Image 1 (cartoon, rainbow, N blue to C red):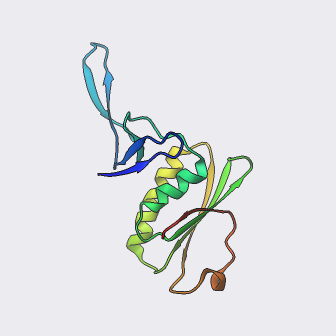
Image 2 (cartoon, rainbow, N blue to C red; image 1 turned 180 degrees about the vertical axis):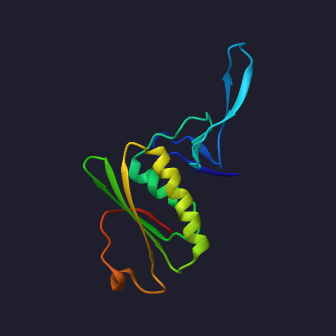
Amino acid sequence: MSQMLCPSTNNSADLVPSVVASIMNDQSAPVRKELRNDSQLVSHSNSKLVMNSRLFIGLELSLVPEVEKVFVQCVDNGKEFRVLTVVNERDPNVRGSIYKREQAIMQELSCADFDFQIIARQNRCMAEIMNPTGELAFKRC
């Protein structure tokens, strides 16, 4: 299991595929229940990380190793996000991994609308392809 540092609290958090929480049923016996959100960003206390939505989107998509950059444009005070994900090669498996992360983002930020786009650079410079809009939310070094 990987660890990351929460930028808002400086507490460590695990990157996990899902969260298992203990809840109490009517007989006061603990019951284990798997939470349905597929987001991989959760804190040690099983509560969601509190962070900027743009940062959350960038971090979530950065979990796909082939993602090089993520640009996020916030529209209408967070009611809509336009997300541009940059990869080098066209690969259906990578796209599938990105789609899973996008689904987790939409579940986590369910009050917002999203316009996702994936660009394959194919070894070209970004300036040759397009001038991305939005702010850089993630860049792989």
